[in-house]
Image 1 (tube, rainbow, N blue to C red):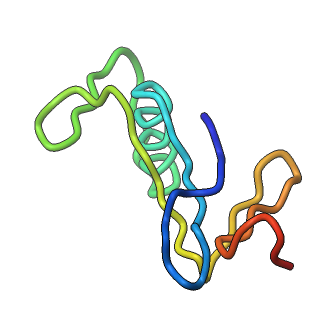
Image 2: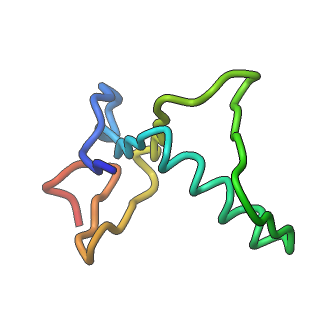
Length: 81
């Protein structure tokens, strides 16, 4: 998983980009299911839009932020509070 400032060109900042591998997307979906009291045991295939997922990306708007390993990434950019 990689967390970086986005490539957005808005007047408010670049946003934050979180890139995931297909396995990380599948793990996130499993965690979502567990959070909703659905537990799956054994091998499974996770498909997104009918296909195996090879990667995923989460974009955080300039008005938001993400915290990764204790580091705060403001959507407004690296020089923002």
